[in-house]
Length: 476
Figure 1 (spheres, helix red, strand yellow):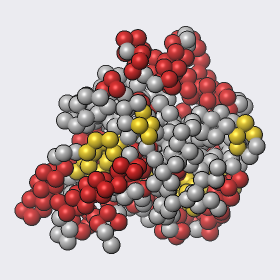
Figure 2 (figure 1 turned 45 degrees about the vertical axis):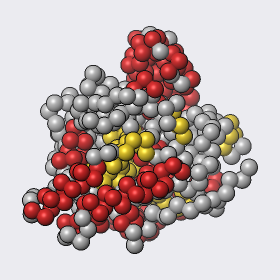
Figure 3 (figure 1 turned 135 degrees about the horizontal axis):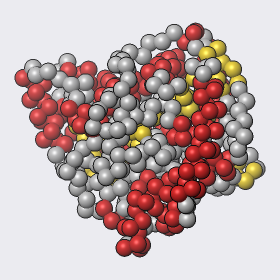
């Protein structure tokens, strides 16, 4: 077995037992990046100091110093996340030479726990869409098939993990950006409860992650690895106004009795068209939760609003956010913005303050309906995406099951939980007949992060969710 085949948890154990050295581990992943990244374009910047950092980690190990949870384990960081002393471009030509002088709180914790940053992963410009390409670095491709998108906006992180160029990675999620690519690449992705991981990436606006909720979280091949990383990322910090105190828990203790759980299941939230091949895999996965002893019931959901209204609520918040945050830069450098970003800024500028605040009325409707379900059930299951990965040169499918959908947003069932802030994961649960991975979305009550992870881990142990990417053919 190659070093790069090992999970993050296995690597951590072997390093602490001195059966593997941090230098050996980091070197193996850097070699794999060097050999394979040109095919997938997952990494856009490689940390030139990674080997030196691995040598320091090895010295600490040999001296018998106290080691952190992640000592010597490599990690990939999304290029929307500021990294002290390392290029951070946000996927924009305007920031092609930007090197921050700080790390966000969660990354400080990750480094303090001994993890070694391999480099930065690709993202769409400012993370503005659910696929991954930008004017600076181009297209990231799916390790299952290089003609397909890995999704976005954490597509680079997902591709890096799926292609075993990193044992785990950080992603950010403002509308599904962890869960969408996790589902498309067959890995596990977790969006924690809003505020459990402090979000201080943008230090000019500490309230910018609230409308809609923006989360940082782990992406890994296994739930166990994701829980390990999350256990380090999470926790209250008084320097950020949206950081929430929570009861201290051991998030790596994933044992749970599934027999006591009440689980609700929705095929489509009463809004979405879900492709038949995805629905078949999801239905089987839901039945598997019943086999684990959980009581599973299908629920009908009626938000009382259309999908168009829901998407307008979500996208309106983002358009205003981009207009406020990047409008001045756009006026000075319009040629440096993609057509998609320019359009969002233009739309955002048309919102009055009253228009913007009115969006909260629809957001409240969504919250009430989801919370009503979670008042009566421990978890709510659904598909993560309505389709499997599609060709990377398109926004998304315009038709599902013969019905017209919005190609930009009509296939992602993830935005709801960025309006509400509930914890939500995407768990790989199987392949369609065409051989592409499908993700099951599992959400829980606010601060029930551990339960979401435990339930996903129980499923993973019983049904072996991770499957090695294999080439597939696109039917033209």
